[in-house]
Length: 95
Length: 484
Image (cartoon, rainbow over all chains, first blue to last red; front, side):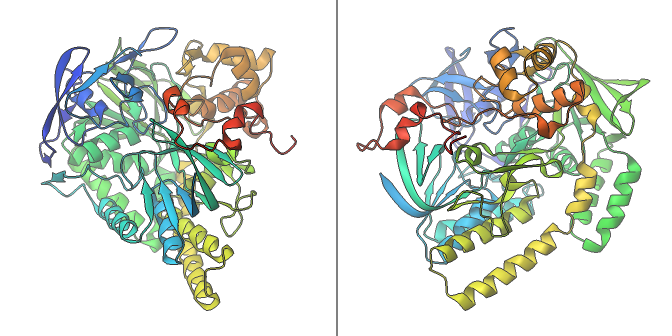
């Protein structure tokens, strides 16, 4: 698919894990930020903007812009680019 | 309530340098960083337990950071990662780990909060697939993820060459690089850099990687429109003149799915402003920066600043400024031996002179021209959080007040979750270009805690039973404490 980010093969990652995004299971690896898991699974946007309802995705990647917000069960609303994924992480989009 | 002699905020080059130097002098030091691991943006590290079989682009910078972090870990510095400092009140910091809040008392505070990449408002810049060059770099180097299949880089100066080289070496398909600067300025800068070695060879190495991959660099070009429906599908670029204004009839289209913008950096001064530190406007150092003296002291006693938050000067200077701040904190606390101090101080001062030598050339290369702030169309969003357009912001500036505060009250720009970190840089520059007033005369908004959003649940579950003045900030109009 056009635009889908690719995991670089020469990296040795942590153990595999599952993230449940709006009920759908996604493959991730220990050490990956939640945004990395989402993007590597073809999710480029996971939020709608406040007024215009535009699709938004990762922009600054360093926790400044708050565009990548998601809701994580047990953690509340977090920046996907700042939170490491963990096995069984339940995530809701459209916050 | 816990306390410590020195608190350093920020785990990048400046913060690591400060923590090391203060610990070396025998002080009790706490180093706080919001992210899960130390290193900041410059010494980007891969996650614990990861490795890369191709080490070419996990390069010197990574290795240097790795070594520095290891040194800090060995030095007895208390490290609080995943911890956000959200307020400063007198000699107390309010911090959170998102589940609780508590306060830390300090004798000396060193702010090493760094910088972020400056945003550019142009049509389509809010589309998914548009990110800062730093975001792309964080994904590639720190996470082993290529951000897209067909990538366009747009920026100015040497930093984006580095991003481009790293992307190419990681196997990304970079379609083109747009550089707003002209070739003559670049060559002249390169020649001026030759006697200083180092940096120029690094730049040439990046260029060689880029050339070998067959990526074309379009000099004097800016992206003027990013196209797409729900995601980036293409970019229209234009040749620009020396003021970066589009030359009519010189447009080129690119078929890409990812755009990385790399035009410079904005100092992170939120905490310094909250503490009441004096700011000064230095356009060559990123705009509003934290004023400091030759000892890295700010205008507020016992608060130091080190690195980019006191002006964009690069990581080498940041590390040394950190060391200087750590050393001066130790001297003020009376734990240094005079002879030893003077020797150390001389050493750092000399190193700083050497590290600052390339700055005039780099600043020439990275100077922004007004055309960059004229790319927004009427309905282009400027405040991404609250969806406020260029038209609404300029209208508010004309009718109400050409300052951030007035624009904020009128339009809600800057009231969203990023708290103006993105649009707060853009708005004064867009108003300046549209109304012809100097940027430095445009008033800033009032700094308010918490500097970043924090969960109400955390606020409601304080770790301290003793509730001191720090919780009463909302009753006292913070930021206006000194009788303003």
